[in-house]
Picture 1 (tube, rainbow, N blue to C red):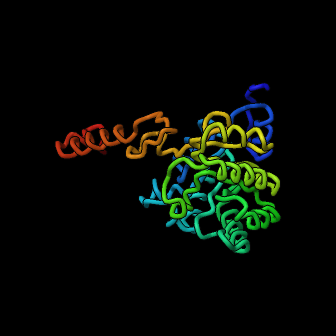
Picture 2 (cartoon, rainbow, N blue to C red):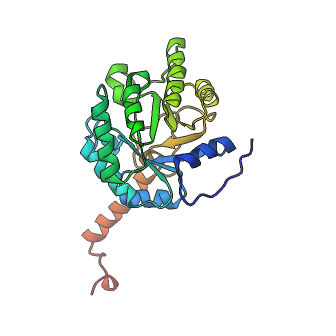
Picture 3 (tube, helix red, strand yellow):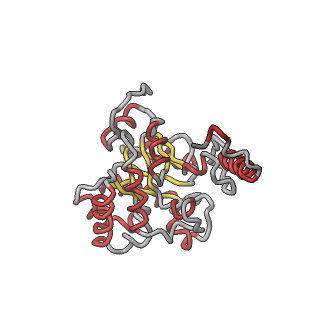
Length: 272
């Protein structure tokens, strides 16, 4: 299979499908604000996820559950204004779609109309199939999410690896097929065994994006604050830190404080 990289002016769901067919890996990162999204987009990322992880890294909550639909729309709007190339996918937050397909569609329409995003992402399989189908009938692209689904953390009770037992692995494979058949354009697999993730990626035609799911999938996603080292308490096995911005920024602020206290800043060249 060819791995030739083709440059695209604009990433669409169709482009992602072509990338899978060619064997070209898909790059995906989160972003929640204009300035970060502009950097990430300019760097050539394929997909930007406006994740409900904003609840953790932007608002300081312990879980993703507290973030609201209004807050997700605010973050998504900020990101959309920054991008020229990437596909922007927005998480439907907890409580905006579970158990009520009409509410799921209403939540989705608000995100699409008010933020200008390109697609939404939902956690779950068979149990949310009705909501997925209703959203798809409105012409909105849907990305699925299986494995560790953080919105269900109180059901699982732990953030450990999912689908290590046969029954759960079989359900995950079944759910992946159901999501593809329903019309999802892509699928995120979070924190599952690499062999199982590879099996899923090979058994469906849609792109499969992994986070803690090994390298046998069609692409990878990380939380941008984690990979840049802005967060320093979170160190799962799957995370590679490309910078240590926590220490870099902290050091710069410490120097600024010292310069202000010592009256070194501003100097004569830095005033009018």
